[in-house]
Length: 122
Figure 1 (cartoon, one colour):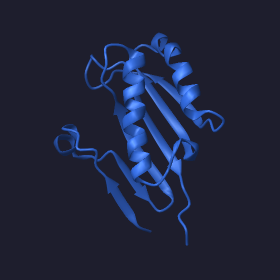
Figure 2: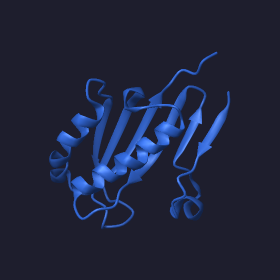
Figure 3: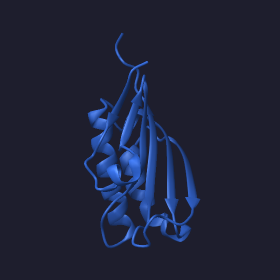
């Protein structure tokens, strides 16, 4: 099995020792991703933008995502993100989990992690 690491160039990657995504065979594992912005919806959109860039580099798209985990310090802020997420995943919604927890910095309102499955041509 071939393993490919995708780096986004973020400052935390070398500091913490991780990469944005790992492609392991047909599986694409995208690290928990936060976005910039003043509120949860702006951060949600930006995190999805960063995730989509990693998926694209791995040769995948939103329809290939099979699992998503949302992490928020305040579960009440999840509902404003629902329309954004429904639009993003469209007719190919993944299995999902939402966890209420602390994030690495109090300025972050949402972190999103995805796993995608994209069979490679033989």
